[in-house]
Length: 466
Ligand code: BGP
Image 1 (cartoon, rainbow, N blue to C red):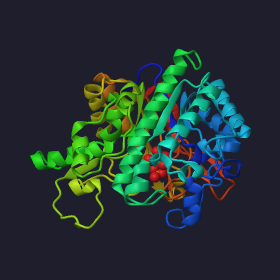
Image 2 (image 1 turned 45 degrees about the horizontal axis):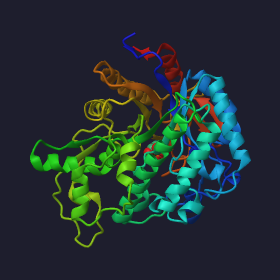
Image 3 (image 1 turned 180 degrees about the vertical axis):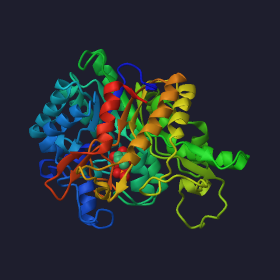
């Protein structure tokens, strides 16, 4: 075998509570239920998050499929609004039972659960208080995390404070694709800052509880970040600076506080010059310093290609990071089949080397990587399953670069595909499909393994491929 991975390497996939569970009548309202109610057709073609893939009722069947795929690990999130419909107060015992059963069943099948506390699904009652823009909500989030650790911390070994925290900032406060749908960079920066604070608080809490023997002694806490390498168009200093600024805003804005315990000075001075600094509280600096994560999940889809700004920005337009640089299309870029995302597998390698060289080589795993395809049913073969060679090639290419990074000393311990089964997307419901397993919306959500699933099953079993 040409590409063999280290012993114990994680093979698996990620999902998130809101995107797969359904059973929305058994949890509190989230921003996504509200957003869908307000704008059912803006993104979602009338398909809301009510049922999604019905994982809430079918998780046992789905764990059987994970077993068939030879998974040894799996990431999902806890729905805050399922445990606490209002975000705090009375706990929903049915929700507790669901997560207990799910976690137990995964462990029983030798599938390591990796559990995120927050994956975009803010309880509406918390959003009414301002979401992460408000420190009160940060405190409620910490209380919710504490209860999760008390309830499940005896079994769950890998906890994640947030999934891709930059995305709710971009979506909700910069580019109008999440609720609350405003363009206000200053508010977005406050949300980003408070989210980093909330992560640090929960990391510290977890470390304390571990020291007191209240959770597993070998438990670890991390964060999942979307790290999008920013490549300059050329080596001239203006392009290099543009790429550096993009990197500061979209990668280092979370990477540095969460892994190094402090913000990069250059980012702070850019924000200070524009009067964009967030409101901070006494003790925050120390909180960040102490609250550094113990492992990193790295979500990778595509790179960012950056050049110096050539077109003037409308002086009246509200400030956005892009006022300081521009994107360009890589000539001859290879496209994903959806959204025009560029396929550039080497981006994984470059990022992993960056983490090794500049972030202390902390343990890292690919926590999402995948390919969304529209109208995928057209690729169904005569045997009745989806013939997705394009996805196999995509994963293979990324795994090769991962393998090379490991050979060069990067501390990589797993690969999770986005995603296990087709699920509800934040931007287009079920239009683009990512799963190893097809979910047929026309036929009672029937699950059918795709060709990529059959392929991945062998890779996981052999701990590598040719
Ligand atoms: C990531 C999210 C996932 C997932 C994925 C695919 O940003 O963490 O939850 O949705 O992107 O993107 P999309 O569903 O928007 O196509």
